Length: 128
Image 1 (cartoon, rainbow, N blue to C red):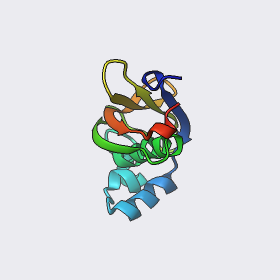
Image 2 (tube, helix red, strand yellow):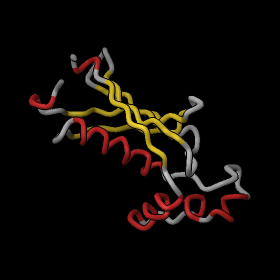
Image 3 (cartoon, rainbow, N blue to C red):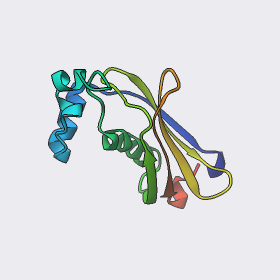
């Protein structure tokens, strides 16, 4: 498979414990992520994932698929929340027109929790 047709996907379901653990590691204890009672009265109605927790799953997929790959640029947006217990698909896909990859985390209903692009440098011995 040519790299310009590369597509990586992985299913993931995050839990409240994942949110809590990420808060401990990152220091981001915003109650929207870790306090179900607080979050229940917000516009989200429940706790939501940290955006960087979603991105960490993208980065892990890249690392597992292309050992030694490095990122020199990333742009991310978070158009919709990701809730605990929600089935998500992490996607990294090569773009035809340049050396950038599109990155997405998508819900089962097609809603997009994370979208962006990244410049990924892959060692030649790891290209498909």
